Amino acid sequence: MSDLEPKPEHKFAFGLWTIGHSGRDPFGEATRPPIDSLDFIRGLAEIGAWGVSFHDDDLMTFGAPEKQRREELDRFKKGLEETGIVCSMATTNLFWHPMFKDGAFTSNDRNVRRLAIQKTLRNLDVAAELGAPTYVFWGGREGVESAASKEPADALSRYKEALDFLCGYVKDKGYNIRFAIEPKPNEPRGDTFLPTIGHAMSFINQLEHSEMVGLNPEVAHETMAGLSFYQGVAQAIWQDKLFHIDLNDQKIGRYDQDFRFGSEGIKDDFFLVRLLESTGYSGPKHFDCRPYRNELGAGIWEFARGCMRTYLVLAEKAREFDNDPRVKEAQAFAGVTELAVPTVGSYSREASDRLLAEQFDPEQLAQRSYGNEALDQLVIDRILGV
View 1 (cartoon, rainbow, N blue to C red):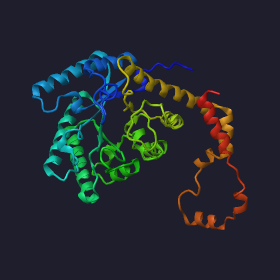
View 2: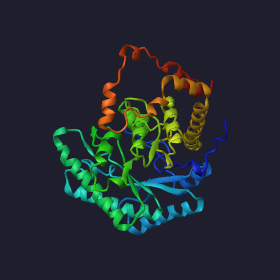
View 3: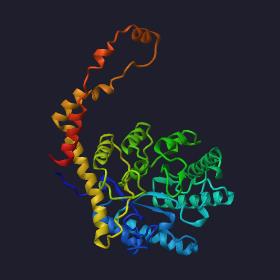
């Protein structure tokens, strides 16, 4: 194994709500004290992290006088300057306060919708001040329990209206900020609007400034729905829409668990890391996860170190896998590289005539074996270190 110490060039980042999560859940109160934002940033620097992200309400007390909010923001800025930790991403809390119980951008109450956009505008100013290049939109309350409660087309129109307006604001202000939508199928709403990577990418195509908007997919969210996160991220990269990524772990079919990265779906995580490394993804590797509720003190920082270490281990395993002659031989047998060869090329009358004249033997084609069992076993061997 090569050096597994995280470095700034790895671009590992954590949100204030991750390591600092109090352990509170729907069935129990907090199990550990909060971490002061300055101590949080210093802790990140000590473990070799690169970036930090925040919701507006993580950083500045909601509803507090402007003087207090300014002091809280300046304290955070001081920590960034002292440590060299960068602000890698910002977002707005549009889900916690009871006023958002029917949604934020898609609430049936027009004043709630207007306040949600106002709240976002104000935090975009903060994000720009801190130099955050990405602004994430997780629509946790944008959805329904009762299908009769909203007309879906109207909700999507209001969602589009909000993002179009916010894009316009960023362009007008000259901020160097891109937007990233974070899909999730359910929880806290029974059915969430834009539930998957595919839904979100389709929605982005309808936006006025679609070039400014991409994706922030999360491992747990696609896995909750039984989908392949690896395949979804691959399509986002193919469409040049992977602006940010949330790494954690999850058991299929459970509530949103936000486990430490690499703690559950290790084979899926291997292919995800291999994809990010091989395609040259240069954005933050953002860990949106939380320590187990029974961890205190040093345990929460062990959690953070574990996230980064597992990523680096899997990155090394992926390089070894791709350089293994046995893997190259098995991939050749499986036709992996053949898939990169164009099938027919661009349409022309001549090309279609040639294809129509070609003779194929279906029975002979059916005789081919692709050797996927041997190839998959090489994956398992590499992950297990055999």
